Length: 348
Ligand code: PAP
Image (tube, rainbow, N blue to C red):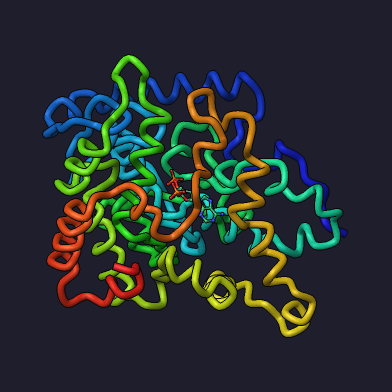
């Protein structure tokens, strides 16, 4: 019989307020440990935080749960397990959707016989179901410590390929990379940043956001180098890196979800397909369903659940960017991705 769902079984929810306090303490210790290195890094204007810092060729937020200090701490301490699977994305590329799909696919037998109302994705944010390695690093007992017990373990990350903790690459851990059209990423990030920015800093204008984005300045950007890093790895190590696009996932969800399931080692059987299991998972993880479940409440004190669900569409940039902005970004994208088979799958 399938296990009933308990909120306490979700990986990244602090189990009690003591654990939450301990996380805050651990976070402060990590920020302190790397403060001297942070001070030496080039900085630029940020979207949510006041500044972004350039580390190993990419821009990162400072002193937050997902931050440059986290990357440094993970590089110094994180020990991957060979069977781990990592979901990598640049922010606003479909992380929440991918987390939901992968969690639902991998755990589908566990919740199969349950009444549907007990499925975690019907009561909790996908970010609570599948943790970022960046946030695990603050926990007293990070999930990855017992990864061999629940092997394979699933994690998400926004870290650029070349900055991943060494053991992830040395073990050849499997990675799933999801990327999205740069203009939709820009617009999505623009709205997200304005929801989370400190009100005293005022709202970011679209012109400012465009200017930062086109210079490559965004959390874990540049956009183009982030995508190129994982794309190159997917060509070099096709068994280890599955490269997906948000646009392909939208156009042909069924085949891409089946592909994802096979890659994760959980292919659908003929019987499951006959029973409509693929469509069931797609419905469970749909924008419509998840945005309804996450209409209220907060993921954490500073992030409302609904901040991760806005339009969920391909091409919403057309409602925001001017023709001139669009042309400039198209030109940069063509130049940066020249000779690479990426743009056609991104509707660029
Ligand atoms: P994150 O990296 O901060 O976790 P991420 O989930 O990558 O954010 O991006 C949020 C985007 O995914 C939003 O796009 P939009 O602003 O253009 O609307 C959000 O609406 C979209 N999104 C969230 N859930 C889904 C889903 N189930 N299906 C499709 N798109 C989704």
